[in-house]
Length: 498
Image (cartoon, rainbow, N blue to C red):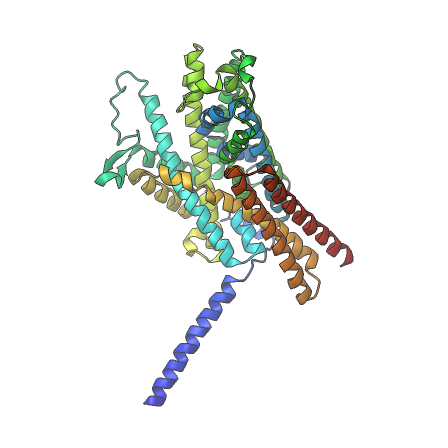
């Protein structure tokens, strides 16, 4: 009897050890990419229908929402006309990350996944899954928050009808009807809008791309019209002083408006539906970012030129600026542009989420139902409906605006991982045919350099935040530059002598 119990314990211990060993081996394995031609040519796969112009509009649609009419004035109240430099600095930093996305998009086979796929290939499965979870947390709550904002704008437009003015209850579109001390906040218009966009996305990438292209083109035309009309009301004296509160507020503004560019990475998730992904994806990523920079800078110049920075409104600075100049009809156009902007941002966000779920379903990290593609519509309908349901529940029952402000870390996580993937994959390519022990040594050196750069960047931010002497920030920046130079120099030398 005792022998039987000992054997049972031994089997249980062996089984537990085997499960743990299997988990570790699975979590630490990296993805090996193969040609995606079989996936694209199959009758039940995604279909290639997106050209360069579609990809650029996709990126612009994801990046420019209602914020272009609000955040520009909000930051200008502190930075003054120097908010223009804030947007340029933020755009320049995004260009660096866009180059990382462009490099990876051009070297990877055309399959869905984006940052998740890059992390799975460069690092391992557990890292990729954690990246996915962080992105999904950001995307889900972001979609619910945007849906509520869109519902509020739509309700405002309905109130232009005299019979509805002031008669739309809060639970329909404006904010929400709160219950249980604010634990629940009912809003029925947000789920309805999400359902409509989900249906459009389920119809096919051609149909959803056409809607996005139309809405994005309308939004861009309105922004250009606002810039042109506003330029005739500019008083150049309002641009002096250019930085009334000093350079510090310009840099602080750059950290705020950085998130106004978030969205260009959505183009990387359309790799499997792009006609010529290796060529078109980099153009789409960089092209959409360039368009966004030009539009943001144009709006900033017009806004700060029309009204002195210290007189800008808080909630709707651009609309108030045109109203003060007797151009109320432009304010109506701005509201329409805000609706178009929020619609395209929400549409592209839902699109990206479904493609990420599709990628994990194919890799076996989620149930296989998420990997299914409709044989006629060529869209991952199950994934798309799931994404729509989650956003509808969050947007219809909870006030997620507060959470949306603290979840931008998801975007930063994705950008940081993509940048690390570029370094890692380059390192792997250069050390692929060398002995194992030497590869481990060089890999550790690379990790040390990257960690040093990250620490210096964090230290410079903390020192800047607490207003220490600029010499300390310069030291941190110099150390980071030296670490980058050492990393590049060592990588070049390893490649030459290999």
